[in-house]
Every structure is written in C-alpha cells, then in structure tokens.
Image (cartoon, rainbow, N blue to C red; front, top):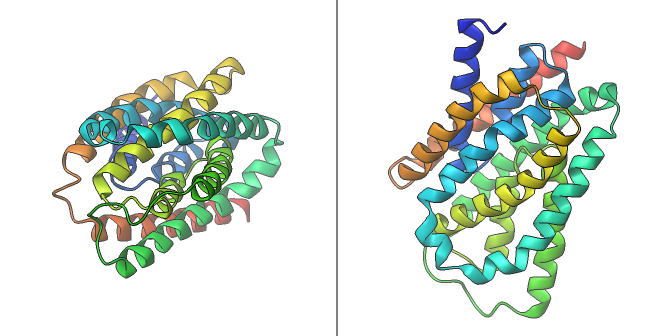
Length: 258
C-alpha cells in the first residue's frame, strides 16, 4: 500500500523527470533512484521508470509538433535504428542478473551524468543553438548517424538515462542547429526506443503497475509543461541542477552497495 509520502515522492520525481526530458533528457536519473530508494529491485525499477515516462515524452513532443513536422526526413532515416536498438536493449536488460544490474546501476547513472556535463561543454563551445543546418548531409554522414543511433537505442532500451543527450549529439552531427527542432526530434526517437522496450517489459511482467500509474500522471504534466516553457527557462541552471543530482544519486547508490 502506497503511503501519501510515497505518492508525493513519485509524482515529484516523475514530474521533474518529465521537465528534464523535455529540456534536454536524463529524467531517468531522477525516477530510477527514487524507485530504488522506495525498495523496488533495480531491474523492475528501470522497467517501471521506462513505462512511466513514456506518456510524458509523448506530451513533450506535442509541444514541439510544429518543429517536428518541418523535419520529416529525419524521422524516416533514424526511425528503424531506434526501433531495433530499443528492442535489443530491452532484451539485454531482462537477461542481466539482478545482482549484476544492481552493481552496474550507479555507474550507469554516473555515465548519464557525465553526458550532461559533456553537453554543457559542447553548448558553450557552439556559437549558436539556432540557424540552418551547415552543409549537405551526405550518404556517408547519414550512414554514420544511423549506426550511432542504433548504439544509442540499445543503451536506451537497456537503461536510458542520458539518451536525450546522446541523440542531441547525433542531430548536431547531422547539421541541425535549431534547439527546439532537435528537442522535438529527440523526443520522437526517445518514444520510438521506449515504446518497444516498454512493450517487452510489460509482456515479461517487469513493471510495478501501482507505482507506474502514479508516475505517469507526474511525467505527463511535467513533459507538457517542460516543452511549453523550454523557450523561457534558462537551460544552464537546469543542466547544472541535473549534474549535481546525478553525482549525488551516484554516491547514494554506491553507499547502498557498501
């Protein structure tokens, strides 16, 4: 039976994750450890988090629908690698022994946090977030991006924290500069990855539904609000907060294993 305190913690974590995913990604950094701290086994926590954040990603993408609609060619090219990679990653997760994944969890969170830190560095070096794509997108560049996206999708199906950052990197590699379009496309591919992963987790009975249903509410509200206010909120402070939270969560998870 969920206590009011547990419900409040789940709603707050999922709403915060929805906002984070709309702005840059990495919401799993918040929801995964929250579930762990509530006593959910690590693999079930990851599966539950994946399912719970999915509606929030859809709500966030709705906020970027105009930008996504103007870049349809990107959707066609990276859709299949996202789908296939998400399936592979989800299968790998449920075939990983619980103790092994529990041991890996803090390092996966740390990895995702370092991706955020990398994004901050790259953003400061970039002269502008806006403007048209630079140069033609060659077949070689598309092929490289597809292979990269496949790897991102495998990681996304397996754990997921930080895939938004990784996808922003590949979109930048392809020449896209408009941050709002990049966020919309990133959310679309994130949904693609997580839909197939979530379906597999549900099929295998890995989702803790009472917790997931509570989190869906928070994630949906947070995802939509995050997309609407993305143009008004200062990204530097939000990213700095995510980095601090990520390092703190890594320390907590490592202490739990000690």
